Amino acid sequence: MAIKVGDKLPDVKLVKATEAGPEAVQSADYFAGKKVAIFSVPGAFTPTCSARHLPGYVEKADDLKAKGVDEIVATAVNDPFVMGAWNKAAGSGDITMLADGNGEFADAMGLTADMSGFGLGKRGQRWSAIVEDGVVKELNVEAPGDFSVSSAEHLLGQL
Image 1 (cartoon, rainbow, N blue to C red):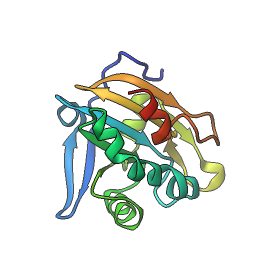
Image 2 (spheres, helix red, strand yellow):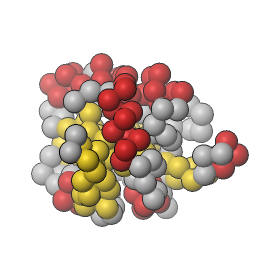
Image 3 (cartoon, one colour):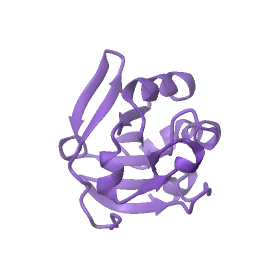
Image 4 (cartoon, rainbow, N blue to C red):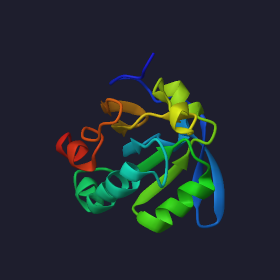
């Protein structure tokens, strides 16, 4: 069953990509006490994710923070090294990369996608959310192949 507005985020291990290397974090602790704009992509360096999704959040980072967002988080079923390289290539210091290498966060959210037909295996769906103190306040899940409601612009309009 997919997570919904009003639910707490699942408590699983994620790995934060940092300059010093991978840093394991527990999601319940990580999201506690702050307002976070989080978005999920099927994969770092994939076409829509790199051309539109991440750049939109980089471009709108100041606007999101001006509306009370403490942190902007990107997550994907990728390892932390790939997530870190993607942020260096197309992101910014305003975006925190949380790797979901084993897909446990996507599974626990109920937001997985089988992309085996494209050789990508099980991934996370494309979505965005506003999370306050670990509780989902807004949730926007894309239909397969779409990119609109998970954009930075759409999320900004919800604040």
